[in-house]
Length: 188
Image (cartoon, rainbow, N blue to C red):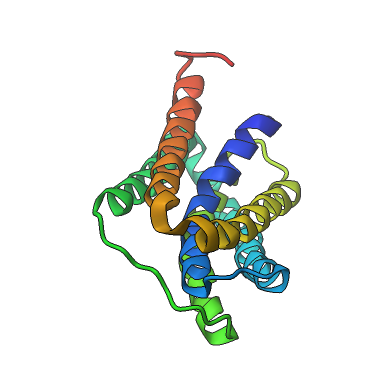
């Protein structure tokens, strides 16, 4: 997996956190650097941790399912991306309150990073340096989450659904690319 592919996966994974960050910013009405950084740390930290946990689980089963690993990676990314698209197109608004208390933030960070856990399982079957990948995913999520708080406070919920649609489409396309490469249909 090259750096551009990892970047696309990181952006795709961070779209849920970005969308929730927009809602946080919308509830705050005024985003200060401390709030932006705190939201970024919560979401970025969990997005960095979860792929590592998923990878550790996936490595345990790598030997047994090497013959179908490309299908697993494709399936996980397609399901995650499809769920993001479904949520974005449902039209339901789920803006949270402006609380940055640990109890509220840990639940949101966990909820927005479950996808990263599944991607980590998929990474166990690919040629990925999990430490670098997880750090990169965390950094991208930190940045987009901090920006999301500001976007929410300035522009409102206008971009929330678009962010989820983009994230879902990216993950589905990356899963399809992995599958097609392994089947020899394409070679990038």
